[in-house]
Image 1 (cartoon, rainbow, N blue to C red):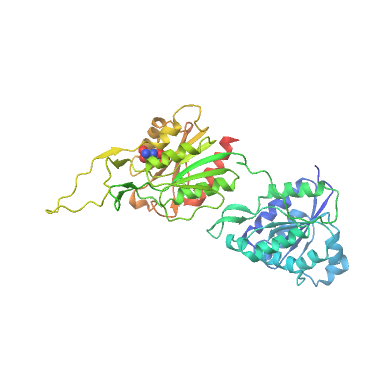
Image 2 (image 1 turned 90 degrees about the vertical axis):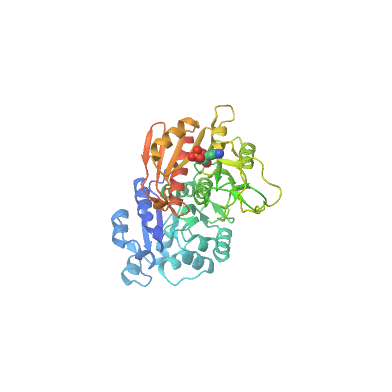
Length: 414
Ligand code: C5P
């Protein structure tokens, strides 16, 4: 529906996401909607009144006790002249003030004085969002008819991961369009969450992560070095885009990602069985560092050192290749199969060869030479090998790699 001719009162509170308010104003103006901006003292640390004024082409309000503003338009009138009040980003502090009914600055005073519907787009650190105080405030605001869009889940400026990112400006615009299309003016009680459909909603994605442990005896095992950080971050990023995710994980110490079905396994054989049981899936990402071999006959009891100190001979047999098994052509094959190639030399040659040999659609290749510091570290530098060629991604946080890969998967499945 058209929002041309409508007026939004946009309140911008503090937080690094405040810069996205500029894009929101641009989208609203493009749609023919008038925007009056109110900037809190916190918000003014991140965007300037001048940039808001340039984009909105209107006066920007910052002061509660401004004689000029009061003579031109009193704050009560300002709060009621809009068709919708939008708070984006809505900081934890401003949401708390709204819930408590405080009115100690222009933004909170307008929010208390308005008789217009209110949409909030929260943005804050993940712990602050998940804190019971913030959640209780959101419940209270919802009961009073305040609508909410986001927050999104993903990598955050504070280097943490989870819900707390400001919804993207097009999603906020979509929520504004929904609310402005409704005839009601007075708030209807009940928490309203307005979200654009998430890109992987309705999709099932299988992800493997971590090492496998292949027992030698009850106390010893063969394993690869793997923290599970990259695989777990991919599972979280896919869930953040709305996918149903089954994460088959070997033994790791990283926490289970929220909103993901986790199946814990020890050995490659168990990992393969868990992957097969999780099918059908639309896509599968094999990020696990699976041990290539297992001991042919693991001892039932702890192997003892021989009297002469001789080491026991271990006969090894190859493990099943989980990626190659699931990627083999057949009716149950996921539409998109993504493998990893961790190499210490000639990375791209090996990765291209691996893609073809294992029948994967994509290979995410990375250099695990100890000098790279990638194995077990928090950063990764990857190359995406597809049928079309090789994309070199810059070195970035493993969570950022995960988000980018999840977005590429969403594009491929669209
Ligand atoms: O052959 P290589 O171990 O280098 O292949 C790496 C890719 O294959 C990764 O995606 C890994 O998860 C997958 N793989 C597997 N099962 C194995 C060995 C590797 O799924 N037994």
